[in-house]
Length: 205
Ligand SMILES: [Zn+2]
Ligand SMILES: [Zn+2]
Image (cartoon, rainbow, N blue to C red):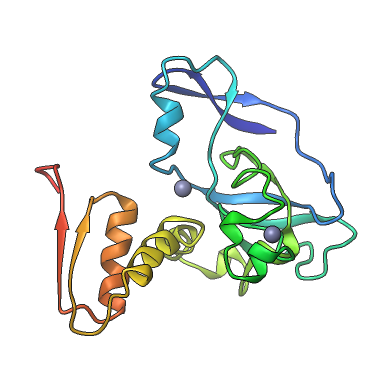
């Protein structure tokens, strides 16, 4: 399959790599419909020590379930899903308490990335995949992009507004105007903020 790879600092290429396969009973193989670039991908992109062929750090995607492990009961081949970046097993104490980002069985936020490829191997799939009604062809391009934000930036921005306990009528300051900051603005608005100030060091924004 084709995958984006880092070729050197500041450069990305496409390489043919081995297509992932089911390795655990609760694995799912997903055919990527859309994947996106996160601010955190720039850490690798800018890393002067990055070696040619280093796999991409992509971790945000929407796609179609292609194949399921034998323990999978929540999704089936053909389902359209959001593939969230941070996810736990759903069964340990941390997950049960709602802190699935600190899952006791965590094996990295996203199996080490590689979502900017044709197929993804996704572990803990029973717990973590979010089904989207219908199929990609039922949605406009704009809507597909909006659904894609639910893999990371929008829930991350929303989480910030929630832990800040933004309530109706509050005045809110969001520090940083990247994708997550802009989603935090949307979230603050959703939660009823009366005034939202977005701080930036970019003149053009
Ligand atoms: Zn991300
Ligand atoms: Zn867990």
